[in-house]
Image 1: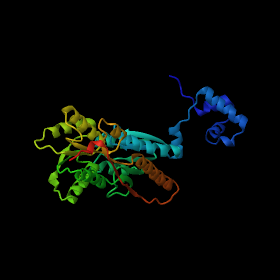
Image 2: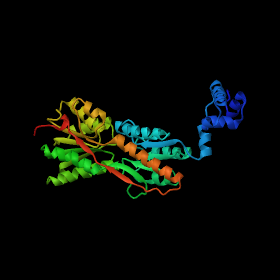
Image 3: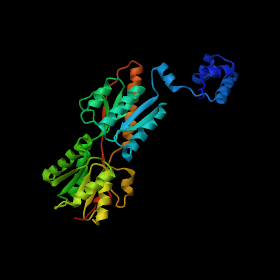
Image 4: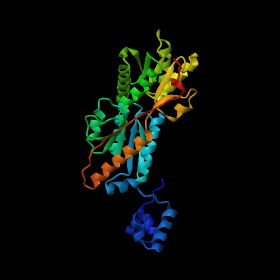
Length: 341
């Protein structure tokens, strides 16, 4: 087995001390130009790579930020990651992106991994509705910021969107278009986002003088296109089919749209559809999808900035004030909901 090249090997090849090599790597301006060039030549020739883990152990600080989301197959979370990664990179940090797949047990495993690696901090969209994983992780004294979730009953920072307002936007739009019987394809009922969007939908119905029985809920185990197709099949099997459907995210809405297309049901004339998130594919669907837009990139950016503020405050011995940022959603109307009733 080939042995890795160490800093002593570089020092020996360049004819300098280990301290000089260290200065070339960490404080190059403190080393004479000729000496620096000789050491750099030895580094290049030997293929020396600095041990980041060893450097972090000495410094006591990681250059990695953890990001744990519900589903990296959802473009919404890809946009969140893009905002976080850009902010972390500007601060000289990298991002370790992990996917809990909406599983509390996988979330627990990744949080343990973050603790083992002593990451700088974590951006977390929780999958565990009980909060036990967060309580366990808190013992490691690693800062974290909740993303796409309000930090209710906790002392951490959070960045979220007002999902109650978002659900109300979606259903108010459908009611204004003349719909009085609406389905809600909701996703896993344990997720706060799903419950909040349902609350907003019911609020909009109440405003219009309609009772909660005007909303027919179709829960799904997951928030993906396949689950949306399954919900669409169930919707088609109802004796009294609603005239509109509000979906907890765009992937579910795209699945419902596929099911309607396969069954020859016209969208929006036979069934109006509204999604949530306004992912890129929403506008590019066969029938462009009306959706409630979340500022995903902004969420990732703000969450990363808040985490950096907290870690810098800890390093400087300053007091950090936790914040809860709640952004407002926006309804983007496209053809999928523009039926003439």
